[in-house]
Image (cartoon, rainbow, N blue to C red):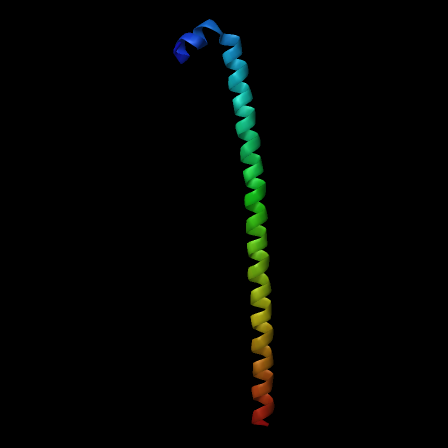
Length: 70
């Protein structure tokens, strides 16, 4: 039986299965978005931490150079 024949014979089942498939798809998309935001958030936190450490090291080097010049 082709899908068109099945849809013609069972329109109620088709619409309920379609709506169920849409609900599952939306749920999957929302889960993927949460995971994506989590990964992006971790990445941004890592970049911020690295940037802070580099700024601190640069400041320490500049202070040390200043002391050596005096």
